[in-house]
Amino acid sequence: VWPAGLRLALGTAASCGVTTTTLYCWGDNRGELLDSTPTAAFGTAIEVTRTELTLAVAQVALSRHACAILADATAYCWGPNQVAQVTSPSSDQEPPVPVGVGVSVTGVAVGAEHTCLATTPASASSPVAS
Image (cartoon, rainbow, N blue to C red; front, top):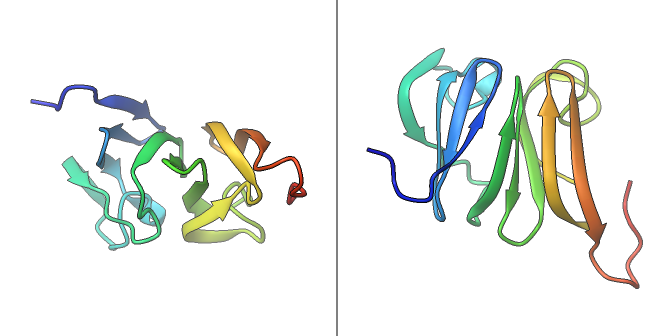
């Protein structure tokens, strides 16, 4: 039985569910998408306990890689990074790294080889980092 208020994100080979306090994922773990172990796959949901994701997760999106918006409107992406869809330069896998630094992230969408963020400036006086 899933908790009330669970929001689902379905990816290419893995899926996640977000409650108000917890991120659960299951499926393919290539590139350490679901956790930081070399386990190939999880058939049942596991709690994602990435140390970089210290605040409640407000939204998650995933394809071959994953991104999450945290409660403070910051965003992190992680997982397979063959075409720099997580961060540049590209690599086989990436731990959660901050993306959209200097802005408030209001939405995230990912595809197999891209990441898109919807943002608003963090404040009128702070420059937007690229």
